Amino acid sequence: MKAKAKIASRFMRFKAFLVDIFLIYTPILYICYFALGSKQAFLENHLVIFLCSLFFGLIQALFLSFKAQSPGLRAYELYLIDSKKGNKLGFLRIMLRYIVFLFGSAFLFGLVMSFFRKDGFMLHDILTRSCIVSKI
Image 1: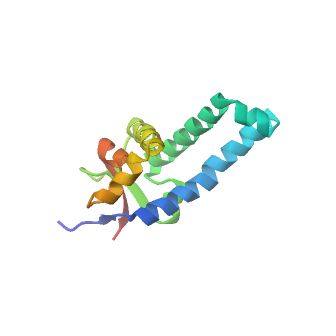
Image 2: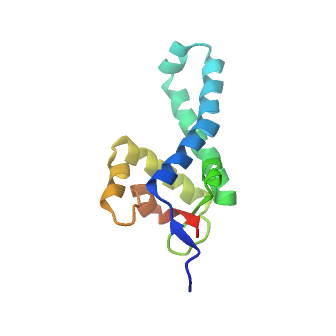
């Protein structure tokens, strides 16, 4: 059987992530910033900052669970799939992937480990058995 997709490069995944940050996360931050009224109020309210990150994860999980693409992935024609079966992931598994991504990124281990792996998978890819691919 011939493969229909290949694992996306780190650079393509990073570019897609940046697009998602600018299209989804930045507007969320601006809305919360203006709702609180000042920079100081926003920076002192850690709950709101946490909720912004959570809301970003929820929106991204909705995009990924319905279409297997977020706006950034769609811009570069990439897809998030199950690395074993090749089909779309469910909402809860995508949320788990996002939570593992946050923890792995906070300690940098989750991101750096992709440079030590032949397949380029990061911690959240390995633990949730998912990968971002591009069509051949």
